Length: 451
Image (spheres, rainbow, N blue to C red):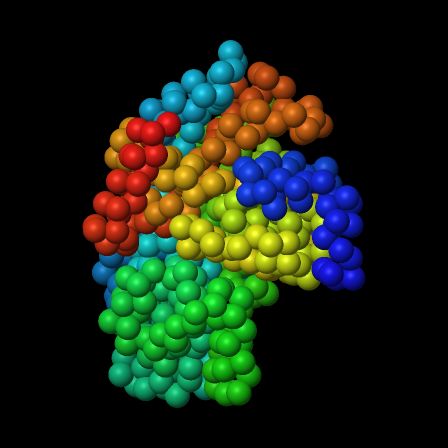
């Protein structure tokens, strides 16, 4: 029984479950999506909250520029560039077989964010910085008017050394939390699930971070991390499932992306819609990004979440309306995928509820498809990403090929679609060791050859 119902009853009530349980690539376009004027209130956060987070990151910029030289060129601001993908655009256009064209295709390279090389360098680093600021302000060791470069001192590291930071992670969030926490001086512990890559664990240990490994999946690692924090009042637990601070750290990107697109002469309005395809694990990263984009672009931006066929937790939670009450394992779905950052069986209830009327759709992608796109992107554009970062790539095909009345309902006429911008959010890959990347590419090339 699953929440008091048999599997047969669930399947009868939600026929889409048949597709998910069979591990078939599936798309679902959200019939409850609503205008931002109605739906933004669901989030419980505002543009003022995002502006506050942005101001905090600006205060920390001198510190980051000093202790992480790779951020000096951006003045200590952690941001990634956008890149046009003309050759991939042509390939997807051929596959779409549409006379009007698919619009233009771009890549958002959070795969190359400084410090920890993934989208988690946004929310993860932001939450630790906020915690450090709160502690230092409360202790009278810092004021908002100070040059935050003063935090780079033995005295401040000794102070933070009296506190601990913990997190549960499949890999990338752990990297961002561990690296920034250790640099500030915190005692950092990362609870890693079984699917986390060895190189990520090794890198954390090299930074002086304690890594605790589990034979189980992400949910167990999170629960164990939460328990550790509850037992120590001086331990701050970064709760990937429920944290508003993580969410706001991601949301800051909205205003920045607006400036980047404007600089590239990309117009975003009702006649020139923007589609953003976001790989989704527990949901905090894509949820926060989508919130920030909705604040900035309103109804002109359409966000879709992409998940592995073996880990469709957010699609399952939102589609049934039961959110974190359900895990994919309840339905016999194994949560085993090469897309380690997306190997999450139970979604964030906070994100699912906050964003359930703001996300246009959800779709699943097989590991094989992610590897094919990984090899194709390297072959056509010279970009190397980890498998999970390719989950967004088929999004444009899912939108153009949908048969659920979504485009008509949203007023997405053929003319508007031909003028659309499609942005694939690359979530990680730049820090993958060469040998591991070579094995990814070899697998993808073989799959292309066999197709």
